[in-house]
Image (cartoon, rainbow, N blue to C red; front, side, top):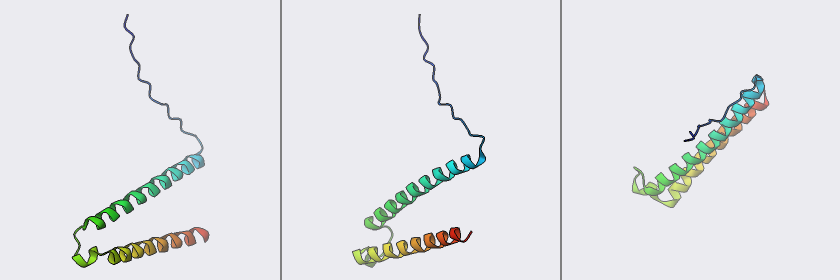
Length: 89
């Protein structure tokens, strides 16, 4: 007698509580956004170090540091602006 293997998929249970679902979705989105930002930063750094489509002057370490500093300053400005908007709601 041959036994059949039954594939059982995990059962996903959804809460009836809308607030709970939204909080879980927000937490998942924030985790994804953080991971995505990390991946993008690594890809951009690798692209700059490989030379990309840049002029010789822009391949210098000083130009890379300046570019990175400008990006970080822009990210901080966006973050600070978002936090200020959240505080004033």
